Amino acid sequence: MVGSALVREAEKRGGYEILTATRSELDLLNQLECHQWLQENRPDQVIIAAAKVGGIHANSTYPAEFIYENLTIATNLIEGARQAEVGRVLFLGSSCIYPKLAPQPMPEDCLLTSPLEGTNEAYAIAKIAGLKMCQHYRAQYGLRYHSAMPTNLYGPGDNYHPENSHVIPALIRRFHEAKERGDAKVTIWGSGTPRREFLHVEDLAEACFHLLGHQDPPDWVNLGVGQDVTILELAQLVAKTVGFEGEIETDPSKPDGTPRKLLDVSMLNETGWSAKIPFADGLAGAYQDFLATLDQGTARL
Image (cartoon, rainbow, N blue to C red; front, side):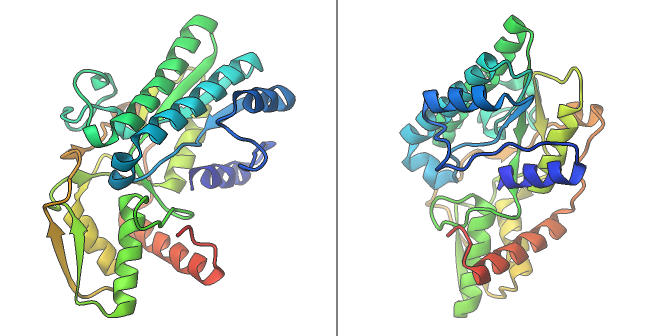
């Protein structure tokens, strides 16, 4: 989802020779392949968007894969970029790098000030390591390696797997299928009270290129919208978007995760950028993309 949005943004802006590689062409878990690809292609800039990602169920079920694969991707690409004399790297992390009980909204300087949320600790530690690699490579080698920490993302090309997807695509699929079946109700995980912030992937892509245009960007900066909703409010918005008219129930026996994850985006705003896509419009577009990919047989289910 993120990589495709970045390619679309580069094509829209023009003036870029875009270098990409499919999984069959380049195994990011293979250090030799990564280093060779970077040496052969010698890019001027690298955006590290690849990651093993998933929602609360996937993070809780596969922590070993989450820490290993994300650590390996970060170390292979950041060190490989240095060896290939790549002058600029933008590493994409996640808002889950911040402590479970961080101040709200979460400023960049609250990193590592208290314990992480247990359900996504493995993923968060891997992303913190990538951020710190960029920070220290920048300090030691004078390279413009920096990071951006997006909030929860959604939009075209999302993953709609029933167990391993993030909350918005999971809800879109669940409410769509409930509507198709004529179900009277849908049950969502948890109490519905945690609050979450959501950024459209097209806004993310624009923000990344905005940061790449800065000569002296922050070592890491939050990418978000500065507003959030409860999970129950989100479910109601998705149900309305999909056209599901039944009842919504919560299941407090399932985990809630972090009580709130709202990013402080003042540093981002000070660089001259803020999110543009209204949430209702973004959800409507995401649902239309889901329907289109279902018809085409290309939905990530």
